[in-house]
Image (cartoon, rainbow over all chains, first blue to last red; front, side, top):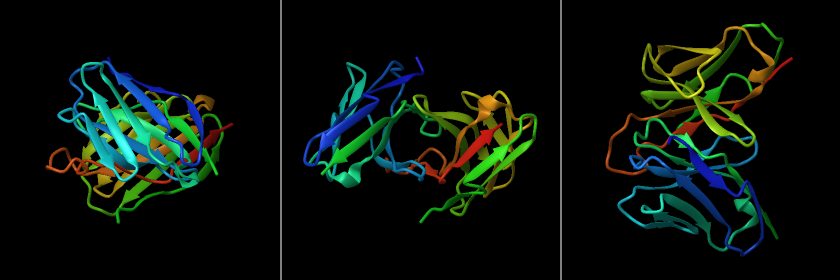
Length: 111
Length: 118
């Protein structure tokens, strides 16, 4: 019940495409769902986060879609750019102090 | 800007050695974390500290211990390093749970220490 399952493991898109990364969780007590972005040689950094009282949140070109009944949430990157090439981690928690991370998705955006 | 620094970017140790990984944050955060990152496994929490001298085990504490004598510094100790502890180790810090903003609980990560145990 503590796992967060993330897919796909890797993703390759062309510039302008809309990569979608999916995550699923089991614990219905989870109430905080952040996405972290990690560039090579750097630590992860918070990209966007959502709580389950909304079904969608947009920040710039990044959107989280949240389906509480299905216990799934996803990250969409609109008009993807080569600079978005990074590893993305979803996470979930019922206590934001203790995050359960997904296994990560390596995104490559080609010009 | 929050800055989390880790003492080494790369470290090579021998099996059985005692290894210290140091982490310092400059934003007066109460919470500090140690994770290990392995391909295909994501980030897994080793230990968590919510105050000086306070600690909680994470998901994979076996073979590790921690020390937090000062608020800004959190150390990870491998008492007797083994080859299966070869990994990327990430330190993070955050404010304690609370606050109205959803970004209030953001964890700020250091650049990581890549540890190789031979």
